[in-house]
Length: 82
Image (cartoon, rainbow, N blue to C red; front, side, top):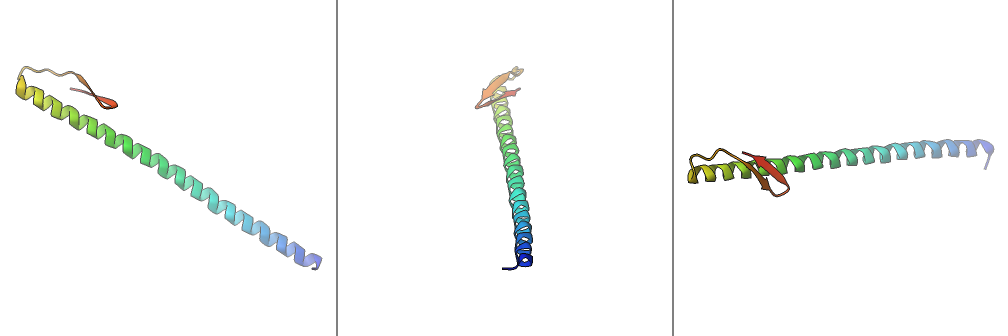
């Protein structure tokens, strides 16, 4: 193998390594961003469920006692202020 051919092989190898590193880094960044967005979506869903449960609780208490003025209710991992 000539010296010139070795230099070409090294350049090809470096280019391939840079391309592979770029692809891997972008895949990792996309995965991290997707994971963060998924966590936020789940938190929003839990907050919505807690709020909906608080509303249902308040309506039930109002039907039973028209003078009901509200309270803070612990629901699962959250709480609803009525």
